[in-house]
Length: 347
Ligand code: UD1
Image (cartoon, rainbow, N blue to C red):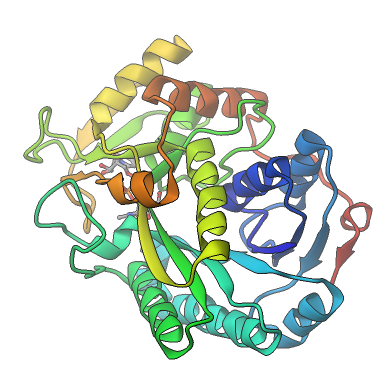
């Protein structure tokens, strides 16, 4: 049985589906600070499989004890954490406390119960401004904001842990830009308030919730002046987690993997693809760069191809049309309210 922290979030949710479909039994812990119970209800509906859910923060070590003592956990997939770059600049202590202390609290409980298999949700943000692309795992780590530093520091802590005890086996997955949704259109990205990220912003313009897209920078040294990113379908990313847990279970030590496609698209290319698949005109204006953004970022995913036997398979049109289906079917995100008790939520 695997424990999934942050299973109600966008990435955790999709990973739960892939893991359940592969045959793993799961237990989820989430404090629903930035996610909805409904997302987990829909995972159960899509897979036809049930799992136990604990409503708690990882900072609550009593609940963690309860989770490990009540369930036979073999490994952990750790998604729980705060994730907004802008917010992390304003609230650095919240970010360090939640993301780093939360992970330490989790690992201490794991250690106590002899569970030493972990997949950690990291980010390409740990590379900061890369000297060149494609980005490889051995590039220097130099995150440029508190959020990114929580990911970088957590990776360093986990590497030290593996160094200290050879029974630990940990994979840190460095995500590039996950987009899209499960093809059912039942689960997807549901940001609070105005989205920070490009795709939810575009889908909300398309559905009429936002007037126009602001293209953040048009003087980058790229083909059309707009930023280039490695967008990866959330289902491909989720499949990478299944491969990573298999690897972690069968080996030991600390390993890092880029999860990306290896190909970059500019903001205007994404707008074009989105207009084509949706039949909607995306109104946009070109404005100044967003502080902290970089020009070009894409992965060399060959280490994950080689060592995890994983490759991203879905193309940009499928990513955009799946994102659009989710938005069309759920114009205001997760609206239906799930009864926590119906989920058998423990706290
Ligand atoms: C952002 C985060 C990164 C995080 C990732 C998660 C920042 C600075 N970086 O990456 O740490 O891991 O999300 O997915 O927040 N864009 C627009 N208009 C918008 C929004 C974005 O033009 O309204 C552009 C950006 O300038 C960029 C591209 O679209 O070129 C992608 O932006 P976004 O989706 O925010 O992702 P990242 O900035 O790559």
